[in-house]
Length: 135
Image 1 (cartoon, rainbow, N blue to C red):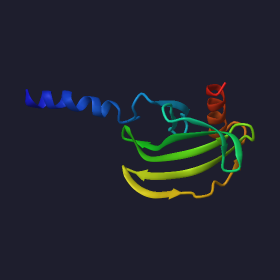
Image 2 (cartoon, rainbow, N blue to C red; image 1 turned 90 degrees about the horizontal axis):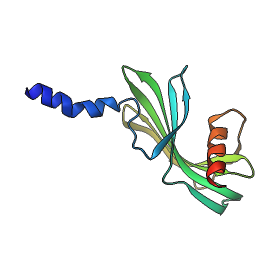
Image 3 (cartoon, one colour; image 1 turned 90 degrees about the vertical axis):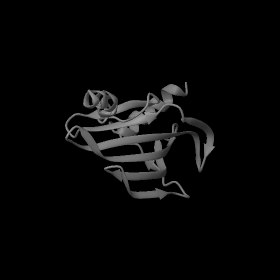
Image 4 (cartoon, one colour; image 1 turned 30 degrees about the horizontal axis):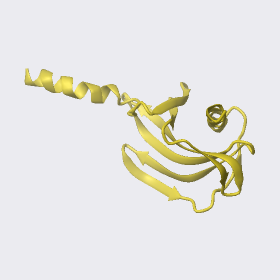
């Protein structure tokens, strides 16, 4: 009986092992071939008239999960991004890489390096998502 009770308590934890995120995270992209998922935080999106050298910018957090095996994702990247809606460019404010829950690399950028958003990429999906919210 104790084992059954313990199993019922642990079941919700294992049920979320594939995507251990709260409801605030929206699935933006899933690649079934590589078993990679990218989410955007719906509660911390911020729109600014000016940021760095860009106008009309969306600041947001994204998470990417990869290296799926044995029912769980083993690698995660958290990215704080700036998306220039009019210029169709993106840049990183910071990122953290994790492997099996442990931080492997982290970086914060004092100056955002702006990159063009290429068609049919996760960055373009994020750009369109931000544009739709900003209407």
